[in-house]
Length: 86
Image (cartoon, rainbow, N blue to C red):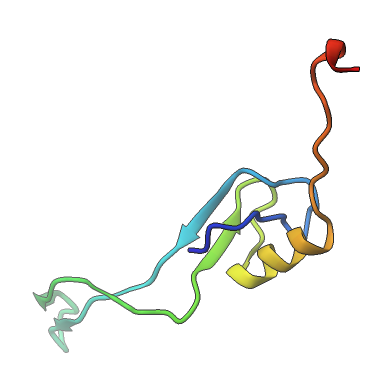
């Protein structure tokens, strides 16, 4: 994951709540007649070129660059929160 701001391109309200989606592969053998599982291997993580990100507000899922590019198109402006600032 890159150390850059995200912004959900779908709901356009979330900049902070996300999850990373990763994939695993697990092989198994089944009995042809009964359907029972005979053998299971350990899960192996599938290497992906780019992480998949999910917005935890609207559940939209897309590649990381979509969220980064949306944040670049609509950057968050720093606004003072302290009334004595001015």
